[in-house]
Each structure stands twice: as C-alpha cells, then as structure tokens.
Image (cartoon, rainbow, N blue to C red; front, side, top):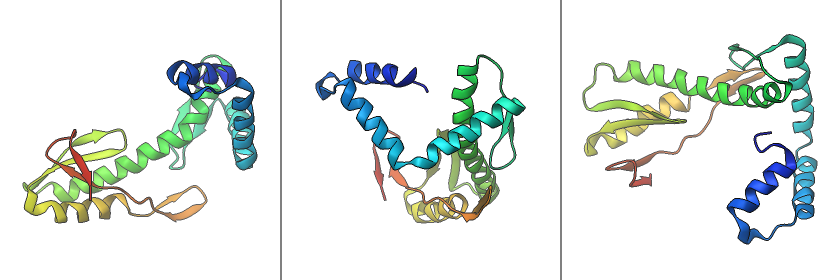
Length: 169
C-alpha cells in the first residue's frame, strides 16, 4: 500500500538498490509466494476493508477508535496500518506508565524518553542490572489482545554511553 501498488514498490526498490538486478516478473513471483505463504493476510485485509467501509472507523485491540476520512486509497492504507501500529503504541504506553510509577521516587534510574518502540533510561553503571529487571518486568508483562489472552512480547536491551554506541546485553 505505501509503495503505490506492486509496480510502485518494485520501482522504489530498484531505484534504491539497483544492484539487485531483480526483474519485475521475479518481483511478482516473490509477491505471490509471500501471499501464498501467508493466506491469512488476504482474509485479514478483506475484513479490515469491509469494516472500515461499513463503519468509517476501526477499533484497535485495546478498544481505541480511529475515524477515517479521505480518499478510498488513503483510508485503506491507513486502516491496514492502524490496528497494528496503534496496538503496539498502546502496549508501549501501558509499559511506560507502569515503569514511570516504578521509577518516580528513584534518582538512580531516570526515564529519558522513547524512540519509536524503545524506552530510553539513564542509569549509573552499577544499576544496569536493576534497570534491566524493571524494564523487563514492565515491558514483558502480559496483555489481553482481542481474543488472545496473556500475550507477551520479549524485549531486547541495549546498553551504551550514548544512543550511537549501544551493545545488546
């Protein structure tokens, strides 16, 4: 959707990575193989399209509502993105709220902010292990997402003197 259809995506890829030497025919075969391997996607996409066309809005897994306006192309593009992105954002926000409560009376671990789906904390070297435990506790907790109960997402933790020099721990 974001690439303007199959041909638009192909043109963007070839423009950015010309050394791929990928023909449009090969690209179409890869696209077909992807959809053959993920048959549930077409069903999900169709469900989203019908729901947004009938209602003009969607709910994410936590019940947040988004009303859609614009052209049918824009609406479908945004409607396909909304359930995934907004649910991920809500998970991050719930984790941030809990982490904030755990940290509000502490000066040794400071909540700095977020970048996309990452939480940034500032911590003294001798408190890294404790900070890791708090981050895991708050970010790997379970959520009920739609019909799925007790869903959790493992996190990666990286440590460094600045955001440019991080190493996974």
